[in-house]
Image (tube, rainbow, N blue to C red; front, side, top):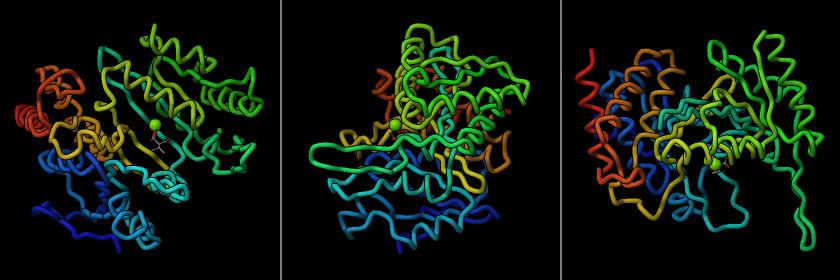
Length: 336
Ligand code: IPM
Ligand code: MG
């Protein structure tokens, strides 16, 4: 199987929670290592099941993730994920998409904090243009965009949970062109009304523009799968760097936590990847595991380290991955 041993480097193995750790390819292992160091320092107590899944595995064995791996993942409470490269194989099915679908991780929650901004994109994660329903031809290819009432309802509920006590909920759609988005909009509006939450809606092109010229006006955005994918990379640029951003892919029973940057093969192994996205993903994981104070403590330490000038090259600085990790650890030590 893909299990490559547990408790590497003497990391703690006790605790009742089981976390599948998938470092993956490129900078994935480097940033996951940082995240685990920070989690250790915060006193996080969970069993780690390391799984060798990804492009490297595919190159060695012809398979990126086996059925046994998926079964092993299902035995865990949640997943801490680094990044996985896409192998140059036309028949390859994205591991990340298989995990999202296989574990029904329907809500992709992406908080954006930085440059004085603080907003969340809540992205539907299992349907839309990622339906996988495709017809591929030489002269014509089609991808079916699927919007269901149930899918829209549950993502709207999740967005309303997150918007409760915050400023504003914005439903992002393209219902002037896509009839599938009329359903999405209608369902999101009625869920918000039932929850007595004020909401507005915005066409996706206008949202893309406003994210650049007036990002401050946003608070919680809820949208369909591909729009959320695109807007979240844009949002990362607006707050400063993809390297700062974390995400939680949440389902009814399981969850997967990953930095939203990819495997970045160009800088892999150089020790200069920004670990903040992975560290924040670890914090989101602790929140999901029922340790909100621990999550808060990590986030505060990250913010203090950044405010103190800890910056990797993606932010125009010269720090190395390890410098950022140490800065965060120092800030955690200085808390209390
Ligand atoms: C993301 C990524 C993925 C997506 C890819 C790697 C399949 O871009 O998590 O945003 O499109 O969802
Ligand atoms: Mg993306």
